[in-house]
Amino acid sequence: MISYLAKRVAVLLASTATAGVVVFAFMALLPGDPAEVALGVNATPEAIEALRRQWGTDRPPLTQFLDWIGGLAAGDFGVSYVTSSPIGQQIGERLGVTLTLVVGGMVIALIVAVPAGTFAAVHHRNPLGALISAASQVGIAVPAFLAGILLVFVFAVQAQALPSGGYVPLTEDPSLWFQSLLLPWLSLGLVQGAVLTRYVRSAVLEVMREDYLRTARAKGRGRMGALWRHGLRNAAIPVVTVLGLQLATLLIGAVVVERVFVIPGLGDLLLNGVAQRDLLLVQGVVMVLVVAVLLVNFVVDVAYAVLDPRLR
Amino acid sequence: MRGNLVIGAVLVGLTVVAALVSFVWTPHDPTLVDAAHRLAPPGGDYLLGTDKFGRDTLSQLMVGARTTLYVGIVAVGIAAVIGTPLGMLAGMTPRGWLSELIMRVNDLVFAFPALLLAVMLGAVYGAGTLTAMIAIGVATVPAFARIARAATMQVMVTDYIMAARAAGRRGPAIALRHVLPNIGSMLIVQASVSFAIAILAEAALSFLGFGTRPPTPSWGRMLQEAQELLFSTPRLALWPGLAIALAVLGFNLLGDGLRDHLDPKLRRIRAER
Image (cartoon, rainbow over all chains, first blue to last red; front, top):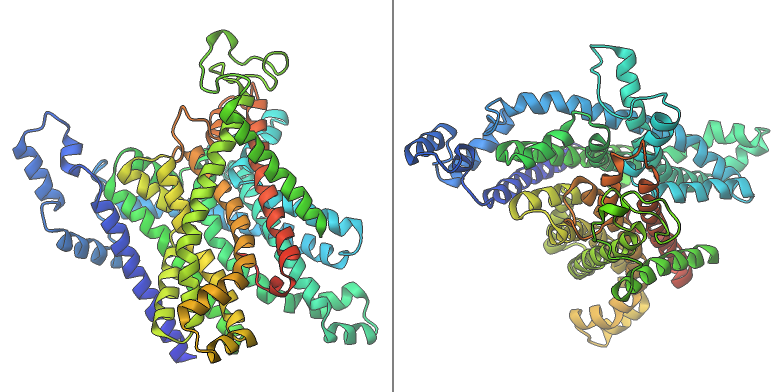
C-alpha cells in the first residue's frame, strides 16, 4: 500500500508540474505584451519598460515560469496586471463560493439519485421503474445552465418565490444566502442526480443478483430490508467512484451556472479575467481548476485501491 | 431495447434533416435584423415567432442545428482519429512503457475539461467555432483512448488473434485486420455518446461567448440572448433549450441502442460520459 501510495503521489506531482508547463506555455503564446496592453497606445517606451521590470515580464520565459510555479507551490499567485491586487487572495475568496456550489449540488444529486436509482432497480420490471429510467435519460440531456434557466422561469418568474440571480454572503444574511444559492444548487444537483441515478440503478441491479441477498431473503428479511442491510453498502462502491469523477464535471458545471445566476465564484473570475486580458489571473484560475480535477482523480484512485486491494 | 434505437435515430434524424434543409431553405433569413417584426408572436408568417432583433426563431434553430452538428462532427472526428490509434497501441502492449506513457498523458489531458481548453484557446486566438471544436475534440480524446484500449485488451486474448500471431502476422497488420474491425462497434457507440457530450459542451461555450460567434446562429447563444427576456418572452428560451435537450437525448439513446444492438459481447464496456 505504501509503495502504491508513493507511486500515485509521484504521478500526481508530475502531472501537476506538467499541467503547469502546459498552462504557462499556452498563455505565453498570447499576442501582445501585457505591459503595452495595460498602458495603451499612448504610453512612452520608458513607461512600458518600467512596468515590464516591475512585473518581471522582461525576464526570460524560463525564469518567469520557475518564478510562477515556485510561487504557486507557496500559495503565491502573483499580482494581477489589471487590478494590481494579489491573485491568490481573489482566488481564495472565490474558491469558497464555487466549492459551496459544488458541494450543495452534490448533496442534491445524492438526495435525488440514491432513492430514485434504488427504486428504479427494485421496480425494473414495471412501468414505474421504466418511468424513472426515462426521466433520468431526459435529465442527462439537459445541460446545467439550461436547467438553471428553466428553474428561474418557474421559481423566479412564475412563482416569484426565489431570486433570479445574485449572491448574498453567508456572513451577511444566512437566510438570503440560502435563497440565493438554492436555484444554482438545484440546477447542478438535478442534472447530476439524473446522471447518478443511472449508476445507482445499475449498481443496485447488480447487487440484487448476488447470492448473499438471496440468503438474507431466505433468512426472513423483506425485499427492502435485505437491500437496506446488505445491498446498498455493496452497491455504494461503484457509485462512490462515479461520484468522485462527477466532482470534476460539477466544478466545470458550476463555472457556467455562475454565469446564469451572476454568482461571484471562480468561473466569474476566470471569464472576467479573459475579457480584461488579465493573463496572470487566468493562468492562476485555470491552474487551480486543473489541480482540483487532478486531486479528485487522485483521491478516487487511492480510495478505490483501499476498498479493492486487487487494484494496487 | 429496440425502442432506444428507434427514438434515438428519429431525434438524430430530425436534427440532421433540419440542418440539411437549412442549406437550401429556411422560412426567413436567420440573420436578418427586422425592426418592424421585433418579438413577433408565434404563428402566421413566423411559425415560432421572432427575437428582439426580429430574427425568425425557426430559421435560427435550423441553422443552429447545422452549427451543432458541424462542431460535433469535427470534435468527435478529432477525438476518434487521435484517441483510437493511441488506445489500440496501449491495449496491444499493455505492459510496455509506451502504454504507460500514453495512459499518463491521457490522464493529464483528462484534467483539462473542454471548457477550460476553450477558454484558454479563446484567450490566445480569439474564441470562435474553430477553437470550440478543437477544445471539445482534444478533451474527448481520453474517452476514445480508454475505450479503444479496454476493447483492444479484450480482443487481444481471443483465439483469432493468437491464430493470426501464429500465422506470423505483424502488429500493424493485426491491428488493422483483426483488432479494428472487432472494436469498431464499441467505437461507434462511443462516438454517439461523445457526440451528445460535444453538443452539451458547444451549447455551454456558445452560452458563455466562447463558441460560435454572431451573427452565425447557435443554440447556446440563442439561450444566452433569451435569458434577459425570460420575464417578458420566455418562449425565446424554450425553443433552443428544447432543441439542445432533444438532440442530446437522441445521440444518447442512439448510443445505448447501438450498444445493445451491435455487439452484445462488448456490452460490459461502458461508453465514457
